[in-house]
Image 1 (cartoon, rainbow, N blue to C red):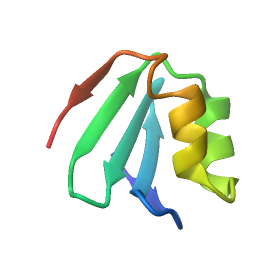
Image 2 (cartoon, one colour):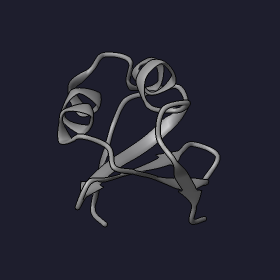
Image 3 (cartoon, helix red, strand yellow):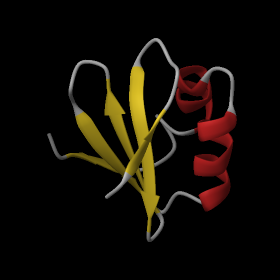
Image 4 (cartoon, rainbow, N blue to C red):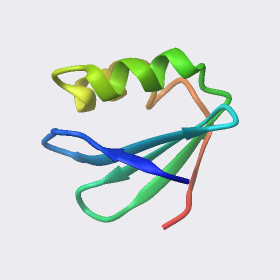
Length: 68
């Protein structure tokens, strides 16, 4: 999945494909969050603080799998 680099204190890049949001953290770990509406991805890549948005609206609300 292609990811876009973002400016964040804990997220390196974010990708989206087929309702799956993929997040690469600065520590190198990559997670995929399932059934996430595209609007979340679009907002995260333009938000001034994508890590804060992630913590408030994604982290505890969607099932995920660690892929790396």
